[in-house]
Length: 234
Length: 234
DNA sequence: AAAGGTTTGTAAAAGAATTGTCAGGCGAAC
DNA sequence: GTTCGCCTGACAATTCTTTTACAAACCTTT
Image (cartoon, rainbow over all chains, first blue to last red):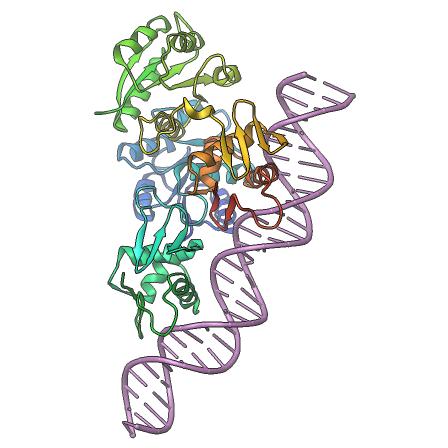
């Protein structure tokens, strides 16, 4: 699923430019051009990062920072400041912004800083950053899956899992026994904006069955529910 | 019991901000605004971590570091430095600070570093790597890595490691077997405000594979997890 | 139960994306 | 100025993902 970035900026010129750049980098963007709408926009869009201009109609970037932090929202904030604005305070402690760039800024620098912030907050990168706590190994039939090592073991046979395969297995595991529709699975693993009219899911299922030793004749663990989806039986 | 953090900082503005942020994160804080009172404050409060400004009335942060370490106090120290101050020496060997952030700093970066330090010292969370054993030699396959000499030996072949290479190896070693995302590795080795490209990491991996004798065909020790990161198999 | 239309299984090809590697460049230390 | 570690850009190589294609399985309707 794409990483979501909210841009709060009133200058339409800059806003459009930013959106274009970020989208071309594979981010999902939303925008807001008034300060007093920003907090609501954050609540609605739930971005992984906020690019926030300081000078805004309605409420200043400073205010928005404070409000968000007061509400225990810890979304990383990258401030856009004009030269000469008081950046020390911006990035300083009261306000809770995480970084800033000074206008006019280079696209390259902006992207680098966005990446750095996302990396820091653990939302960055691409796939399966996976939280530490939910990484306990689990069993499916004879096979043991260890998310920390991306491995599945059956006796002495050890197979490596790809990111997608692991993700899918984890989804199955957290809903063990339930029938999961293809849509549901696609949404969970591929994200809510995946437009594949394809057999991609089946493909991964095949691979998983092989690695789970569930391949020949009739599967015992990854069961097909014809016309609906699949379900996992441990 | 809450983790205790002592803040040594004379600027009331920053001090208050710090206290607020740390308390809202669930830490127990105490503070001290004079350098010459800091050592006593440490003895009294017995914090799990010290946030220490460099510029202080009474005694500098450098001095305090030295004094504490001389007294065999190994409480993790996070230094606050202004831009341009000599940070190399701070974190370097003599002084014994464990990490630093440069003012102005983002809240998130500060918290990330505090958590990292606490984690490292075993007071924070999961793994306890203990600073004592950090310098002990360890093996990866046929190769023996000696952190004290920055050398890796395979039979009669001896290679020198650079700082980055060693650091990366140590991170791998403390999480041996686990898949480490590129983000994680960049954070651990390059720090929380590194804006470089991710190509850099590959580069170091290449060098390490060569020095570990893991170079041709398919690597046996530093394994690539496509789309995620790497993992070390001893 | 057979026919017909769908849905799924599977292998192989095509397409994307990520990583490996090399060569060059920059800056700090010597 | 030279050396050394470190970072970057470019391109090749690799790997994963998606698509394609067709056979097999399934369900529904005769």
